[in-house]
Amino acid sequence: MPRSPRARLTTPEPLLFLGLHPSESPLSKARIAVIPAPFDQTTSYLPGTRFGPKAILEASRQVEFYDEELDLEPFRIGVATLAEIEVEPADIEAGLRKLETVVAEVSAKGMIPLTLGGEHSLTLAPVAALRELYPGMAVLQMDAHLDLRDAYQGTKLSHASVMRRVRDLGVPTVAVGIRSVSREEADYVHAEGAPVFLAREIRARGLDISAILAALPNPVYITVDLDAFDPAEVPAVGTPEPGGLTWDEGLRLLRAVCERRQVVGCDIVELCPIPGQPASDFFAAKLANKLIGYLGLGPEKEPGGEKPEPRAASKPRRRSSKRRKRGR
Image (cartoon, rainbow, N blue to C red; front, side, top):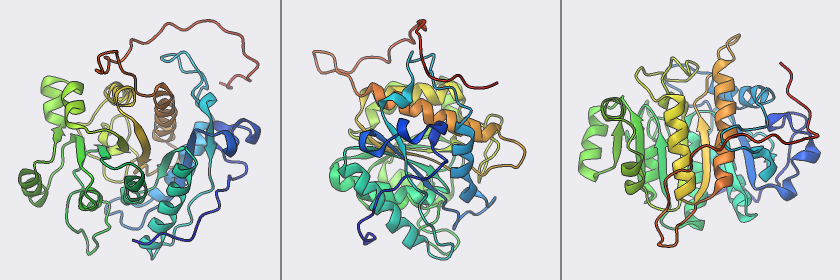
């Protein structure tokens, strides 16, 4: 689809990721661009994903800057929060064009886009923008659903069809955590040979990161539908499904991919906030911060060209810091 006119990248006041001061997150020095995208046009069960980006940004103010696993403060690689994408309720294509334009601008400036949703239909826009810059790019899809229907509820741009549209662009996908599949999707997977790692197989045999990486070309776009995780951990999603991934499984996979592949963009989608229950909002915010930390690691290669196993978590070292402490 044609993009919107050239975007003017702007940052909002005062709702910035992690509650950073504008002087701590200038766009001119950013390596990561956080893009709030409140899409909610095709939700089919629980509406409200349009409130997801703001809820994540609000919750991120309570996320600790320091990451004890990585022994660093992820935001110091440079994180800027852009203004929210203006989404028209009756015109999803217009919103997708705007998001695609912003992602193209961000990537052209050397930043990695991290889009906060919003329903899963939004993933089509950044993938469309990035595939032109990164030929051979693949998508890692962490999700409960395959999202491979040709159309759903009368639209081909549904959140239930987004991976079908991605594959229509010639971009391969690798799905992890799947546990809800339609007959149409099962037939498509068998016909196309699309790599799928089912949640029940992960429960039975463990998370086989080596097999996932073997199926995943380079470079990679990561899309995290929060319903990939078990609803016991993240109940506030648009379409919850029992039997999902755990927090630790998700982090292990994300770290391994960031260490062994060039990750050129990512999104976290389908948060549907529940008033008075901020746990899912905080989960999503901390996941975003962890992902930023992993992106800072970058892909590493050993002399022979093989990429190493994920490094063991280092022990925290005491260090002085002038940064303010988070309140408790």
